[in-house]
Length: 615
Image (tube, rainbow, N blue to C red; front, side):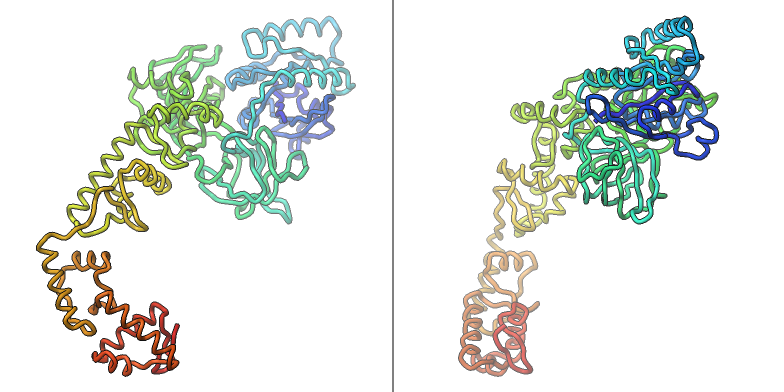
């Protein structure tokens, strides 16, 4: 499905054209109908002669509502630039045309409206003027279709021209990435609750799926999906979709927010970008205060020019945008920059890095890195995204590098095969240098731990994760990779160096042997142990002792003998008392009670009054 947007000066007939084509009035607000002027975004849809269905986004043309126009024009595939034949090219025509260029919308049709108000000679003059105004723009060779929405003349030809145009459009939208929906409306429907709308990009959404609303970080669940008033089980990218959300109030979300999958994206207040100044705008100077429009969001910002003090009209340059509030963006997103007062579109550009560090100006290495991010191959951009040596989730690398899933799938195997990138399980990636440093840190931490605690099996896993400062979601992959390389050994709770075996010193072994010999001389009621905590823990781990109570230990063979006698006695006579156990083994009541309580805890026995039965 394709999204077609309107553009053009106020009162040039955009909404009338949409209604004539679709039968749907895009002016939904009472004020719009009273003033006969579009104030906010309007939406409709159309089935073309080919049977292809398209969505139409109608935008306001008045200069006071350019901000509303920008909220709807960012996700479109092609544009209908509407110019009234009785007025020709006007100021907002030129500004909308500049915005189309800056957003890199390369496909469109010029609609000469209201031709019923002019004669053929005037229409020919206006057509020439329009073609001259389009020169040098993305729509320089766009077809010009004269129409009259009032009489219907030209509407069939326009629908056919749209079909021909869409035949030439590349397949921009594939369900191969991360879904994100720039929200342009939020409202409530009785009996259903919160509904948000927008154009879905990147990946699909499904009913029942958990989603996250950014920048707030709110969680919700998709209760229902609709497109063109038809219910969907799954919405594909490139679709204008309404999402019914459970678990969130419609006032908690609004235009400018982004709906995506949990944990996939993070808000930002810094953007590295390549910008281009509009040809008839004033020069842009370093530190100029501007308004940024990206997706459906708007944010005040300061322009930090990185390689110049000023950009002249028509010039292009590198910049860092420092935002007054967070937005959600990914590499490759297009945006518009406007002067707040007097309000004017002055520049636009493309996001190169949505999460950069703060740069110092006039640094050759910064400019070279930005150029690589902008123009490098997918492999080069993947390596650059991992250049800081930190382990990252694959989804994070995808966003940071500004590549698509298919591009990563093509480039990554070679990087893994030649050792430039290391996979951390199924979900993580790290550069070769980063993995070497992480390995060294992990080995040093474990070696230090083994030196401090030579009798312990290993370091607790969580402590090891914290020592290497690994994100929790990546730690399992780090452990799996280190294990596969023979670097470490693991058990359920600890991690150790692969060649480490806990062993007591000769002195500790002699001390332990003396204690074990003393226990063997009085096996059923052994004397208290006199071992330090580390040595005692090692002996228990090696199964040289069995702990019955905090101060009572038995030799394993003796413990097995006593347990076997308890089972056999209960099976023979049905139950057992503390006194019977005490008398049989010639031990004190304290020892007998401790052993039976231990067996109760292990559910070998179960207490009934003053007797024990099998658990």
